Image (cartoon, rainbow, N blue to C red; front, side, top):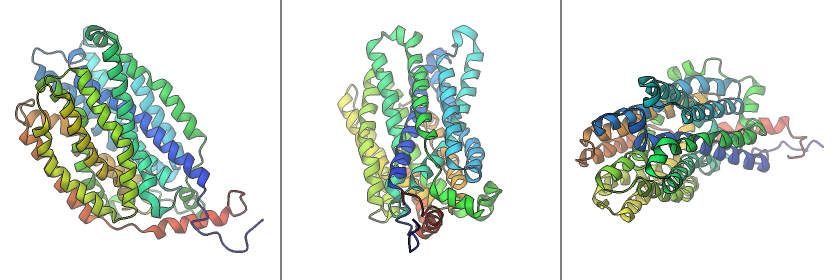
Length: 451
């Protein structure tokens, strides 16, 4: 029966749908970041040997990190293509496509011949598949954030949007766990010969599970209201660049510090630990594994806190702290001391969490709902090119392959300063934008039993 009064925005929130959206966002990004993280770890530990053999390990590492960077450089392609589609045809449909794209690319890397088999063609194919991975990830993040946040109360967006932010550490945990287990069970020769492929091939099972979750979910109430009103943009990319340039720049800059820090802690630290601390590959992977496990708690905690105190303030304090910690990180590390590496990674990834947890909410709040998928995706992917893509390569170059660590620390500190500039440029959240669409959605569905 139709209620005697209009349904409020708060009453329009479907708790069951919100929980499903949170799980879909979390599991989807976790599975996709598993794929991406497996490649990241392999680029530090395996690919220099199998795809870029060279008498000079430094050159081989540079080439391997260059293919790692391709996955970031290709992200803006995904941001433009899938961000546009997400604002036109809906969040859910696009997220199914991105999941399939990353899953298929990762599976094919697992069966790819190496340099010994087909020469330089192997490296070329690896770059192509890495490019496809990056395109998928570029279209994934914005949609995953909206999937959870647009089902929930906009005043609790920090917590709900953090579902997608838990994906990278969860995926990193799964990826490094798989690689650590394989390196522990297999000999070094067996791991290099075929063991590393198992981690890539497992993506087929994981992506199938992610698809099952996402296909059962409806699109977000906010997008359904946009669609009913006919308020969707026909040219969202052009509109973002012509009317939303300041929010876009704010979103890009806000992401640089967290991206660069994450590259230091989860990618560069692997090769640094093996080449300069004298640790085994397995010991380095376990250290990253432990640090990532802590983030499963600290990221949603940071998102929750950002709903209770000023989001930009929490983010800014963490960015400033990271700029200082970047120098302390290398001071803590000592040759052969796995425990100190674990401690440094836990502290560093906690700083990362208090930037990364509120980040999703901060970025999407810069854009109106009708341009949100496109704007958030562009901010995310463009920042990835200048942040995460270049960082491992630049770390290796400026440190003379790890021999001199202070330029690396300075690089991270500068990135955090740019993040502070982005936070200063950003706008405060406007909850009324979402509440308007939630009320319209509620009005159209007020006969539904869930309301």
